[in-house]
Amino acid sequence: MAGNIIKTNKISFGVVVGFLVPILSLFIYYFIKFRLFSIGDFFRLLINNKPFLTGVTIICLVLNIIVFTLYINSNRDKTAIGIFISTFLYAGTSIIYKYFF
Image 1 (cartoon, rainbow, N blue to C red):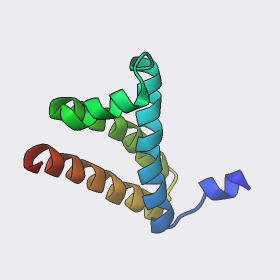
Image 2 (image 1 turned 180 degrees about the vertical axis):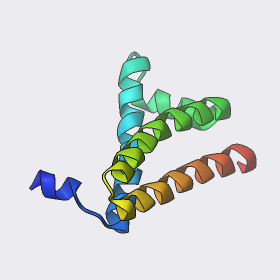
Image 3 (image 1 turned 30 degrees about the vertical axis):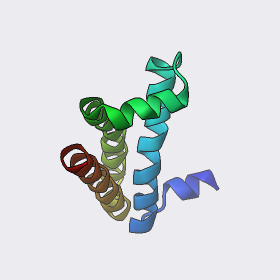
Image 4 (image 1 turned 30 degrees about the horizontal axis):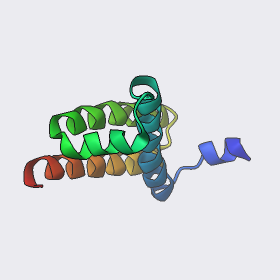
């Protein structure tokens, strides 16, 4: 079952994967670097410190780039397109938040 999910080649699946992977990497980053802070303090730091938000966004999207590369190399181009769309939306949202809010 899990093997079939990973082999899925749909843009919608890629969008979902592309949105979930950065969230997973955000929590991994939190547990590695900020586990002494509460999760609420960590998110307040993200919201109030825009340079920090940019750095964390880049770190989280690196894992998306790795997953994107894995799907491209396995000829699952539709899923890779979905991951690219999600990555672009994450990065765009981060830039808009940084400069306009």
